[in-house]
Length: 499
Image: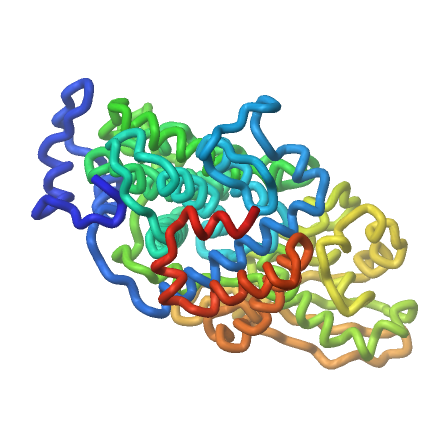
């Protein structure tokens, strides 16, 4: 079944419940979560205009982030074919590079590039993550399938950017809704688990999978378990956090391909007593879907517009930059700096003591705030060793007091607010102080979407200018300025503009 074609069963969810047949016949009922996710990606539905427009912004922003990552050798050393020279004629293309790769390897490349600088969009809930990570799988498969006959169904169905945007809406929804009330980080698992799950669902559908096949592929995604969060926390914070999502999308495409070749699924991958995901890795908690699946996540996604920083600190950075004009010439007189944050900020990015590398620094609210106060700006370069060697940064960090504001914590969890508030106030040795600057909604929040769009365009332009001529940059901007033309464009043509 080609991606984008209406499902040919009256009730696909009932179909998968009644009978699932592969190489090995299996008529057991699949776990409810697997059924709901599979039914969602295989259903025929129209998404809101807001969701489609936002998906186009996410695609543009993700590709801009990917291009910026190519400036960093720590990223580029991981890219390309796994074995030198192992390219694939007419394969999936990698933006900003000359490679044509198999879609599994291309998914890793694209996903790693998008995620590398921690500058792509974000979703915050009981579990958090970056839904645009899924573009690694979506773009790699879309380009490959549009340039080649589908190796599974032998179909040469055209794949459009509209299909890419629909797949993105679905992947965002799966990842984000599962994150609303299932906290995998609390049991030590990394949130890229949900990238693998979401990408597996949409990748299987893009390959022509029906509801039964998507459910089977999803069972494998959960059986894979989850990466430990070791690399996100002291004393082991490191660069793996920047390629973990690429790894998740790679695995998703591989699982989708195997499933479409007839590999069997596992009906109770989540719920099996003693051996299922819930009992083994989730402290016997039941994984649930908090609300009906539609396009809620895409409509409410959070963009990182102005600076690359862990999202719980975005408003702290913004507050620090507002204070910069009145404090940067007095920082040697600081007595203390008070940062009020949410419970999640306290738990994830409140760090004292040495910070060993860029991955450590961009997840430290004290470091991020110090940079804003010292320089009035924040870029990826500020996390590099050269800037981190400035002794003033640690002097300021030593004077910082990070405390939880309980209202911020409540509003963070309120589904009608979804705020990510921080406040910053600087106190001086002479007894004076700055105003207390409080920002509840970062620039990339849905409540500030219209304000953010021009800034997102500027962010994209700066990224594109790193690699392309002025004429090419203008062409890329024009592509994203006409939504109707973008939606109708073939995926292969779209990807050809990024070489």
